[in-house]
Length: 130
Image 1 (tube, helix red, strand yellow):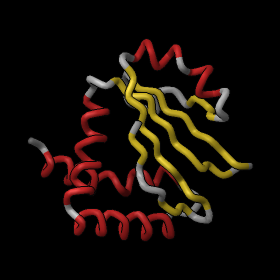
Image 2 (cartoon, one colour; image 1 turned 180 degrees about the vertical axis):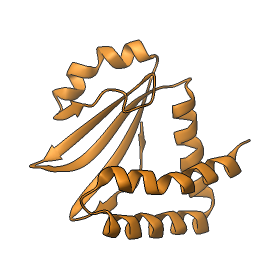
Image 3 (cartoon, helix red, strand yellow; image 1 turned 30 degrees about the vertical axis):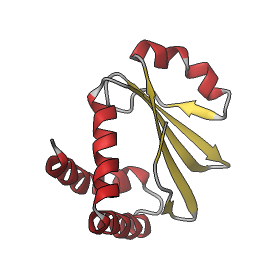
Image 4 (cartoon, one colour; image 1 turned 90 degrees about the vertical axis):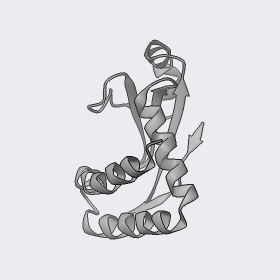
């Protein structure tokens, strides 16, 4: 299980959790189990062969959980990005600063926040390719 750092998004702490599973079919079998932990399945959220869940406190989303195939590109990308941040404190600081600026700018628009981080993540992954 990979646990990513918390980030402020408005007044809420948003925790991203990526979980590797053997296959997409295994992920589908786990939907009820994850939902019983208080998460809501949001489908693949535009990414084939993965499942995305949200957990809320009241109307505020506090957790994101992804079930990703351990042999899939999404899992490998999560690990590459994590490793890039761990291995480069300057990159990690820039990413943290970007997330704080975007969280302030997009307090009520999670999708705008997510999209605004995209260019940074894509560039970090491009540089982190083996």
